[in-house]
Image 1 (cartoon, one colour):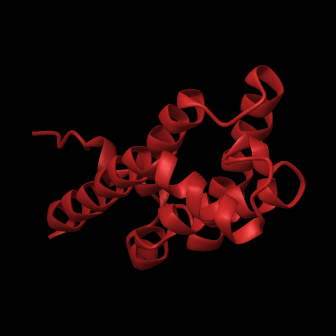
Image 2 (cartoon, rainbow, N blue to C red):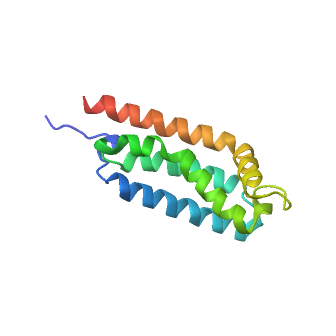
Length: 131
């Protein structure tokens, strides 16, 4: 009898590589989104949720903690970089760096919560499947 592997059995990438991939994809999506519509929109939210799922599926089991704390950090870093030059893309154009980041996180909190929850549930399923 052959054993069919589930999609969550396949993750073998080291944590560092997954972090680099996550940051690179998130920043790319932010740049594309701002270039298309001038602000961070639902386009970013959808990609962020998919990115969280993808990172949880790619990472090797030994590095689950790294990916388990990654989604909020990716969003904060991406919004902080954007707020340095274009705070109006995530908040009011007059907002300072910290206020723009906080406003951006508040406006995209549904995507953050959904992506983070999906990431954690996927990691939990992978951990249980490995036992």
